[in-house]
Image 1: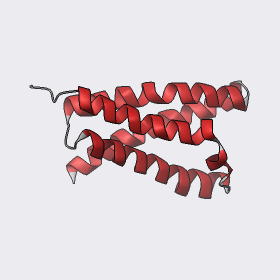
Image 2: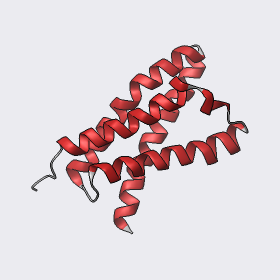
Image 3: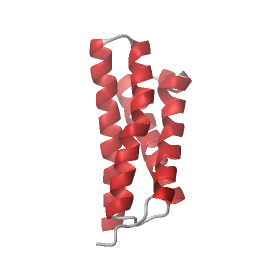
Image 4: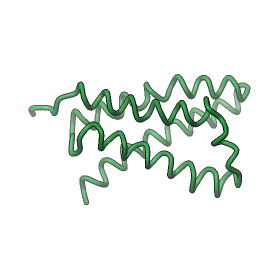
Length: 121
């Protein structure tokens, strides 16, 4: 249970940071600029989060972690953001707003997992 909590907490923190980027971006600039900034920030955010997870915990493989992060993010976007907050699925029609970030989350997490060894401390 502790292991599941830790990995899901990492995914949640990434999702929350990316949500904050979207929220702040929409209030400061255009939707197009916000989505570009978000798409560029996602690999950085999840790179740092994945590095922390793999360096400190490494309970799951790179592939499993990438899948868990992606499923958590996509599920939260679907069930919370689309269904409850926006009451619309229009966000899933945006390649730069949804699909590129999803691919970045998976690929970044997977690559960081492959290239990060468990800490020997």
